[in-house]
Length: 93
Image (cartoon, rainbow, N blue to C red; front, side, top):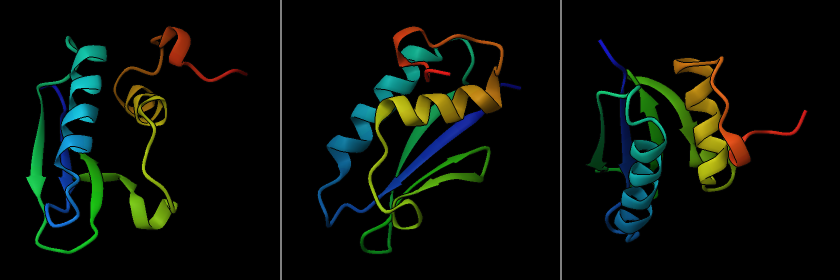
């Protein structure tokens, strides 16, 4: 079964558009590798977390910033299909 990503965001902070944009970026990049990307309004103020199959892979408070699309794509790629190149979004080594 393909992995599922959940983006949990604070609706009171008006982070729906940010979440939807990030979901679109992930679905476009990993269209053949993901089962779904879902958006979940959080009941906890200020929350912005991303989970892959219920495993937390990004937490805004823990990291101290919002994720860039490139950052999340690299994290997802490293878990879902580590051999895959992300082209211009790939990290320089």
